[in-house]
Length: 168
Image 1: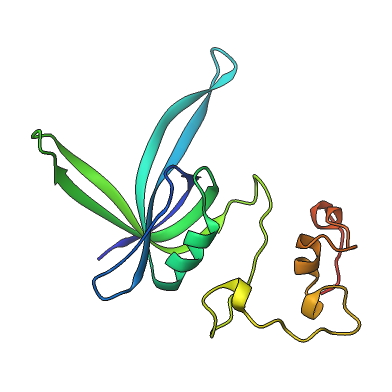
Image 2: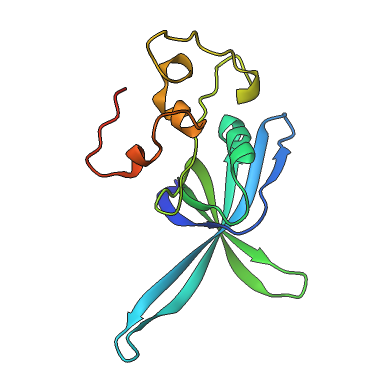
């Protein structure tokens, strides 16, 4: 039995692609969560420690994450928590904290990202067939979000302004 966990932190190492013996795509990277607390004596925030997680990703999520993630990216990861004991060659013992990711997304508090839906027949967004253009819509296939990300005449600021409605 594994516990479900949600982690908010940063990609700490370059993601490493691989595959299982049966050819299933894999991706692994380390993730760090930094905790800060307010120190009332100094009136400032102080570092209260860092937790490290080994993130393991499989199948289509591994392919998409491998194309999307870079070291330093702020992430939100949900997955199954696994604790594994280890022993080093020097006789040291420790506990490794691993998460088998089920969901991964950029933490949008710190920036913007552009989503590109994968077609079921395609392995990459660059080879996905383009949807038919809708004559009355500003973006490709009527997708205003893609149009904003592609630098169309739609105002990107409209997405950031509270209370602004963008037609879908």
